[in-house]
Amino acid sequence: MPLSLFSLHLMSENLLLLASILVFAAILVAKAGSKLGAPSLLLFLLLGMAVGADGLGLTFDDFEVAESIGHFAMTIILLSAGLETSFSDIKPIYKQGALLSTVGVLITVGLSGLFIWLVGGKAGGFPILACFMMAAVMGSTDSASVFSVLREKKLRLRENIGPMLELESGSNDPMAYMLTILLVKMLSIEVAPGHGAMSMILSGALVVLVQIVVGLAIGVGVGFAAKWLLDHLSLPGFALPAILVLSLGFFANGVASVLGGNGLLAIYVAAIIIGNKAKVKQKKEILQFFSGLTWLMQLVMFLILGLLARPSQMLPVLLPAILIGLFMIVVARPASVFLTLLPFKGMSVRAKTFVSWVGLKGAGPILFALCPVVAGLEGASMMFNIVFIITLFSLLLQGVSLSKVARWLRLSYEETPKAETFGIEIPEEMGMLSDHVVTPEDLAGGATLRDLRLPHGIRVLMVRRGEQFLVPHGSMQLQPEDHLVIILGESDD
Picture 1 (cartoon, rainbow, N blue to C red):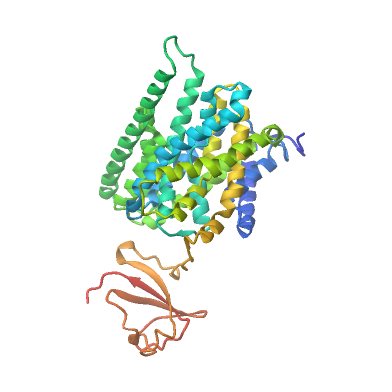
Picture 2 (cartoon, rainbow, N blue to C red; picture 1 turned 60 degrees about the vertical axis):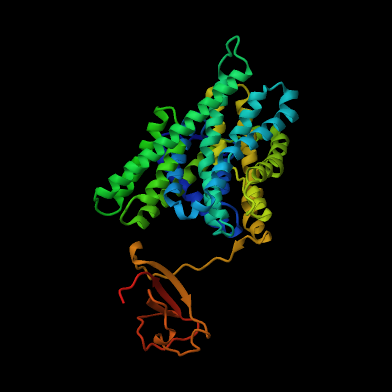
């Protein structure tokens, strides 16, 4: 039975008031949750459930609107992720990431779909295609969850695991989405006489291939066209360039969709090219703009999806959902990772084990689970509830434990403190900032700054001693624990 204290629909004349209260509450919840080590995205989902129809009584039940909002949010999240992806970071691991996001997804979907059919679908009379559709919905690691959890927990991982996980999660959402849409269409149409399962599989494989090829082609084309435009178009400040980048990303997404390609893949590829190839002034400010926009999109998307949930309808499917979730976490995901990464002998078993554990679910699977609901497929509401439970289970079990598992497997570095810039903005072309703490060993050859004999190309910008900020000079007497803000770059002497 619902526990609602009042009944109020979200899409009412009080939309802005309700939205502001929800966003404010979400920020407070995220702040409190960070101290407990809980992922913010999990808390956003739980907040949506708490204030929803079965909680305080705020009703939102428009699945089509939720799907549109979610898809819009996903495009911005992938655009921001692509802009922050560095070629130098992904170059050593692009093969692993690409295989995980394609072959890995197919293996996960195949094993999970078969398990769902054997334990429930066969006895319940569900067609095997419906079981594989449910597996496809949950086949990817969620990009929003992976990006958020890795960065929120400030995990610095060995063996290039971090860039590989971000590349995989950014590029496997399109694969899972394509499979989901394809299977939804197959289940929505009547199969013509003479057209068996093999013809459906072949036509489906062709559709997926076209989606990938067209999505990649549009992403590359728009990416390099955007690079040329940004290189030759001088715009004041950073707001207009940021908006231009946003519009170019939407353009890539839209053109790919119109031409039969995957829009999510196109926008991600275009963003990677723009972020690495375009000569964008004030890039740091633009990335900060997209970081804030991404947080807003994640917050709104997870809240909306939480509001759709009906805990009272989830109890009957709680046990099968947990069984499916456990199978995906401990069998399907590890099997797909170890089989996909089998050719890469240089990657340790510890690293593969950790990658297996980062099979995070999130808004992506819930969003994809809306597709069969909107299409009106039989049993779609039950599937949505199962996917929602598995997502909560994954975020609770995997999201909370990521940093502990990384330390247990000896794959995490200690967090390096950020350089203190004292509010100074340093253009990227000037060099890289770093923060060095003076040790007694540094002063063994003399206590002055000149005595340090810094390597060529290194300059000290500022010295912090306790609460004092000191302007450096050659004869300055240094002390242990002084913080030197240095810049590493080219020098003309």
